[in-house]
Image 1 (cartoon, rainbow, N blue to C red):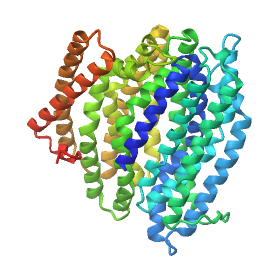
Image 2 (cartoon, one colour; image 1 turned 45 degrees about the vertical axis):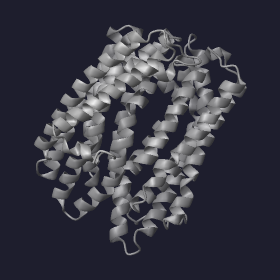
Image 3 (tube, rainbow, N blue to C red; image 1 turned 30 degrees about the horizontal axis):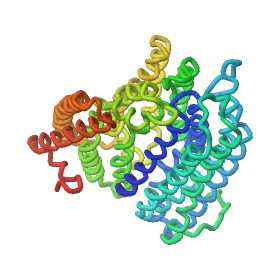
Image 4 (tube, helix red, strand yellow; image 1 turned 120 degrees about the horizontal axis):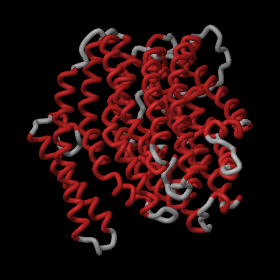
Length: 522
């Protein structure tokens, strides 16, 4: 699973670099990125959040308890999901102007950007259905303990998009402004992006068949246990809605910074690129761990083995921290260098990537509470408790919105969105504290907190020392090789290698046993 995720994220990074080279990091890129975010948000609002958090435990329970091994429940559920998302895709595409109006204002000064975002949205909103196909078939595989395919098929998506952006750069003149983009360019990006996701989704179908799933549409939903699923999903819907409201506020405020400085890369696109880079370690390590552990924790709860649940959560926190903590310090130390290396190409120059680098630094250390909170939240889902995550999400969203509005009002457009990145990180620190306290009450016992805190204290000390040495190594390399081409890449490599080696040495000296969980370091 981790290998599939690494390849997927690596090809995704190549795609992101080409996308930035084609569209830059300013207002033009924001029209595409904002339209491409809307299908994801609506999918999670309609049913995606429930798929990821509620339905896996219920699929596992149905396979254990139902006389037919959960076959009928599974077929009804797949039919329901595909019907809801099919109708939702059609309605969302029809309502594209109103939906985009939630994210940005249509004023005389921004009308062309608004109209272009709507056109992109009409091409991209059918993705809602294909997100559903990918999600529901992936969860049927997860319920059968088949995890690999769901991690590998996104590579197809990335390969198609790499081809699309390669054609865009190679065969067409890349526009610098919103008003310069042509209809052919819009169609290439819009159709290519949706086709890429469709291939990713449909590639799971043969894997599901090989695992024993047969899709036979069943519409006899009444009195079959789906009411329980819908009831549990009610709180998940509110959870997703709380996150969506906070995300929408940040998107509007970040888009306002783009409108104020359209060519400087200070707004939504820079924020989203920095956030995606920042989330890479969490996606590779934490998501892979929890995808395997959630069915296992659900079985532990069903069999009243709460000690096993707590042990799984403790080990997941400690093992993931071996990667997450040094990664957080890496971003805090090398954010501008990473941004310059990856995105200062094509339509974006070094000056335009500086705000993105500062945002990556601002996100930086927030990766630690973000990843830990994500893990602990799955403890509630193992209990099929979706109400508590919603209440925690309200606190996280409230803190994020309050701080983001403060940044918008008190800081200049150049620094406002960088402040919003720090606000996002801080909101998850608050969320981690609340989640840990409530999960401790829910499980009726300690969560091995002393052991976890001791491990994280050692990891933080090792990563902080290694980060400081890595920063000095990169600076020395940058000054000594100032006239050498690719000096930024060489200095980042030197700083990163120095940081990694010193972290491993310090971790061994501090006897961090979880280090042996990393491949090649046993």
